[in-house]
Image 1 (cartoon, rainbow, N blue to C red):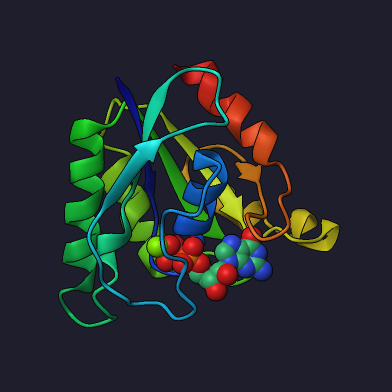
Image 2: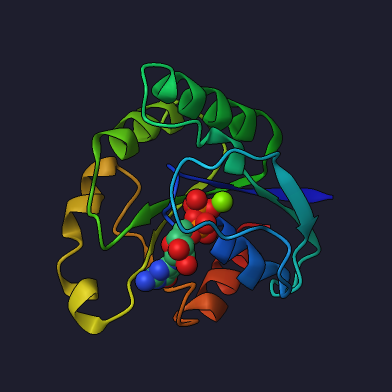
Length: 162
Ligand code: GDP
Ligand code: MG
């Protein structure tokens, strides 16, 4: 079974996207960043190609010194086990240093990576997100897990890779 890993710093909406692609509420969507729990996987229902989704929620240990190590470890796990990585960032908070650190780790892999700019709830947020292109993964796909924007486009993107 092909696997699709959802990677990103805490609170960008990984679990919310996971639930959208799984078609069910499986992952716990947390209101505050830094809530630790186990990684979780489920079959994806929205993409046509059968695949297993991995929500890499375990990276949220809090913004201390070990934080970027945890992010790096999680990214490396995803790189080792996934056939496709969805690298999720947050349109509302903009590009952060943790995004950039994660991007540097992810650039080392041969595994295909798609940049997903989540929390693109409005057209206005779609216009001002070009800073994310600096990560080196293209302009990205703008989604809103909350409002269901571009979720089918995300599923189609997954299908293109698998
Ligand atoms: P994770 O830590 O990356 O798994 O993020 P979660 O999925 O737990 O979401 C973190 C918070 O962001 C929750 O309060 C969600 O309701 C909220 N959220 C997730 N996706 C969106 C979105 O597309 N738009 C907005 N406005 N909020 C979102
Ligand atoms: Mg989560």
